[in-house]
Length: 460
View 1 (cartoon, one colour):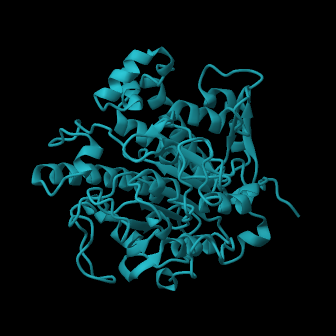
View 2: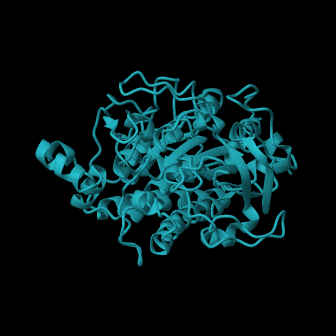
């Protein structure tokens, strides 16, 4: 017999122009299951990408297995050492099939297949990326099949130094071999698509546009629900809604990105290109956006989606291929990212390279902090997730694609055994890691790209 406090797993808080998916509550579990010693919890997976590789000699930990010490770049992740797998000698072999340095090693980061060399729109990365293959299987169980976030706008045109389209450098997530997944780069738009439209479509608009807080719109429904919840669930719901409000207030307090690009004249665009200034970076500056806060807002919105099980799959790009973003806000950094990655063993540039890499790890640590702070079942959200971070290059100076910098955080619902530094055989296919992660998500990815099988070493 169903009790009064039992509610559907897909129960939402609804109001005029707003719809909020709920986090996992005990009230969503039938009495027979609640009495069981273990409750099955959905697994989540996130793929994070950074361009331009890492500073040589500053990435790899010392020691192997569980007895290892974090490297200078990985130091911000030290508090998560027992949640991490640092994986060495993985290689995306398909990215070596050509001489191009950045773009083809970004476009196929999650597809692990050869990229067609072209200067036009006839792009081809060999097939759908692993995140989309997973989303195709598990996305039907969630509101949003996958989240695709980043901070840089799509780049078109041809790279003059390599003679290949820049489109490959703007995407790591691909629905098909020829169609990249639409990437959201504006925190406000990402938030609105999460909570103001149930199904995100480019042409979707709420019938009653909401101008105030989304929490005000759903408050009546929330109060009605609270009456039928136990104390533990009431506290969970209050914490979840407070987190949403916190993100909403930060969005309101920041000047949001506007359509500045449409106001940039062709002459100005040429001048920015001559000065080697990224147009998207220029737009961020004009809009008054703090890049660290922008990244963290996007991560917080993704965490809310994973928390509420609105989505179980996500990708995040810290930048496009060959990113020239200026990190002058970091003490000791004066040159652009791409420039310092071509360090030519100059100590001054290598130090800046290391500092930028370390900033990226600080943001990853922030995201892991967020997931770990969210209780779920007998553990936390990070325990039930996999968060991979990597780059398509090892050393930007050599455009080296062997032994990619890869880490994997989380326990995958108990499937993985983190807290280790693992060195595989040289040139182990990166696709093997993707096959393993797909298997953890309950998706059969046998035969994916150049994969030769799963990596049993990372299992618990």
